[in-house]
Length: 293
Image (cartoon, rainbow, N blue to C red; front, side):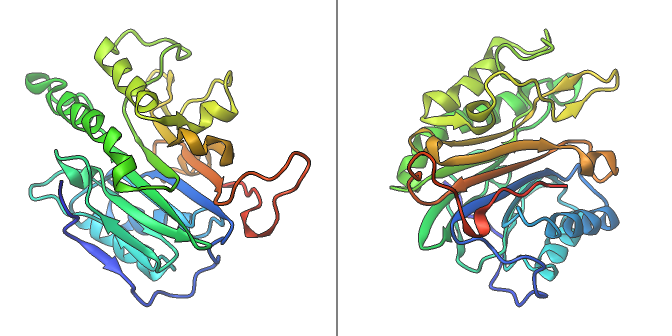
């Protein structure tokens, strides 16, 4: 277990363009694509302008000046808490940013390279929510093909059953770029091995539900495209299975990718913090569905 080594918390930010909802989790997942300082600042501006980004999880964040620019820009644009664990050696990391001051880092249950897997407890409308961000390594150079990826996946698989203890009696959200696809993915990709499909399966085995698949069981969606244009659904949002009935919306959005801010689709998630309303009732307040565009 490791503790995040860097946190900007309770900063006095510029006034946010949007106030956080008090009746629903509004989370946005964004792959930073190891951006330069200038593009990192533009990424922060784009995300901060989205109403449905009370919690923003950034993956593939570099450990260089681009990362520092992203963290500072998020704080300046209304994110009162930015959790950004710093790796001991140069490596990508994951950042969790929250508009509320009532968000706190917790020890990551992922023992290996925990800067890729920060965890936070966030209070929304008097309800605690657990959040784990993940950025799984890519396959890596030929001489070490899949070594880092497989080791990190094994560490995550070992950590997932510990989330209940880390976040007792509350909904848990896992958000990240897993660099794997689900079984039955369309189109199929032969490059993925059984161990990679088993990694995706380990989330369900640990009591987590793929939020997108929960709402869209048959929809074909991709979050990243290779040079040939072939699509992959690499980016995922999971919710604790016993809270899956609280998921109101989960979608992929391509505007940021089309604008050149990232090479991945953005994901958004909306989860009510209260028990589901009776059939026929409407969700009211700040938690109404908002598109990313």
